[in-house]
Structure formats: structure tokens, C-alpha cells
Image (cartoon, rainbow, N blue to C red; front, side, top):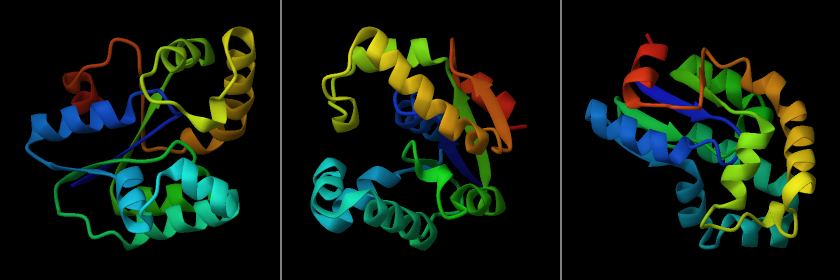
Length: 165
């Protein structure tokens, strides 16, 4: 079975994908890392050099052209489900799970994140919450089309497993 974890940046897609894969004895693939390896630069560098449209097209082709082992947990980029029918493709080719969190919780996590997100540069406090609220409003309609939805607070691999049943 292929399991795609989706959600806004900072919701824990990569962390929980790794934990779920280890728990189930599945392979783990981080599509952001696949993309970076393919282009030889970070996502921020690619975005800056080629723009969002080129990035979204590349991201979609990597999603659809990657060879996935039969039992794999896949961590996706936050915007991936929102373009080029990517979410429909994921739903047709595996199980999708949306890790849902409030804008305030996401802002708290992103304020304390160890890795810098270029799109958030210079945004803090209320400005960060407002930015996330706006972006989440644009994306939530896509995220809610996931086959499974789980609250990201107090998450565990057991709760994720149960949500996927």
C-alpha cells in the first residue's frame, strides 16, 4: 500500500511519514528530497531561479513519475495537492491522509522550526498567523479531499494507523 501524507508546512508530514514507515516496516520517500536530488539545488533555490509555475510543474511530474515500492509512506510538499490534479492522482494510486492543524498551531511550530522556510522569511507573530490563515484557506478545499483526515494534535502512529482503516 502507498500512503501519501499531505498538509500545510509544519504539520509534521515528514516526521510522521518516517515514524509510520518504520512502524509498518514500509519504505519512506520524501518527495521534496527526490526533487532536490533531481535538480541539484534546494527547493528555495529552484523556486528563486525558475519561479513557482516551473516548480509546481516539476513537483507534479516527480510525484507522478517516481517509482514507489509497493509498501511506501510518502511525505509530500505542502502545496503539492493543490495543483495539476495531484490529489486526485494520489487518491487513485494510494491512500491519502491530511494532517490537519489550526493556523495558530502551525504558526507556533513554524516560529520554532530549525529549518528556514523562505516563504515565511520576516513573518512573525500575528503576521505569520495571518499569512498561514490566508494560505490555508486557499488550500483547505484540496486537503479536505484526502481519503482520510486526522487532527495533528497529540498524534501517534497508532492514531494514524487507525485513521487509515
